[in-house]
Image (cartoon, rainbow, N blue to C red; front, side, top):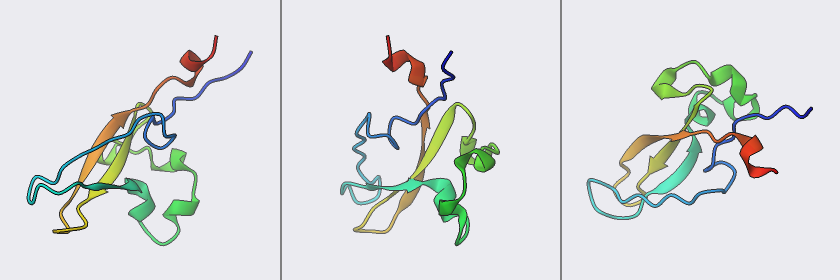
Length: 89
């Protein structure tokens, strides 16, 4: 029996996200998962320890920081994790 773990479609390049900045209308860029910005070492730690509900980061959701390179506006977007098992027959 293989154990499956939910995966973020954005982190795993299963979905592309295009978002325009609400302030200037320019395209925003995905700056990665929010917890990578918590401190100097958080990008190197297991994501499991950051599933604390902050900005709705939990077992079912992954939170990404989107930033506008033009006006420097940023916002967080939440994505539902997909059950990895559904990709296999």
